[in-house]
Image (tube, rainbow, N blue to C red; front, side):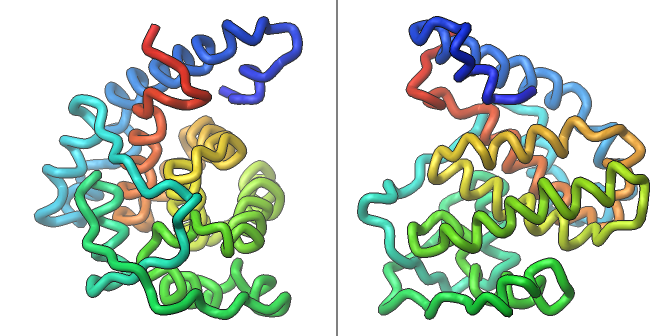
Length: 235
């Protein structure tokens, strides 16, 4: 499901919103019924006490929180660690954040190139301790690099049937998904659509990191549940 379809010149402008909204609602219905084929019983067991909450988000009514408008969005801090903040975001819970004193210095080009490595994984977890910050205007270059890695490097490896860094791919999907949700970024939404539409055998390999897999699907669920993509209304 490519959201660019909603912008096709062959579609009258007054119908685009309805087409996109309808496609998202259809995908949401599919995910509600099929998520247990992706998150196995073993994965749920590894999630421990949050397993019922994950199931409730994926199976239950639509759940999507509102987030700060980027017009006044600089940098947020939280007392919780990265995993605590990401879990709260994925489960559509309130994240206790406060404005930061300053925005971290931009990453160097060399640091950006390391984002697909194990060191890059640690760097992202530290920089985005409060993951909502990936949607800050100052982070556009990093967000674009994460999107490029997903849709070029990661995509090529997966489509070739080769090995890929499950944790790294899932972390990128979580951060890109958060950016899509906070900034209403359709290109980021398209990336999540693409990865969800991968052959089942590729998605099953992501069970190697059950926590990041569950959080990604919960964030994707919230994206599909938003009623105001392109300011569209319910059909």
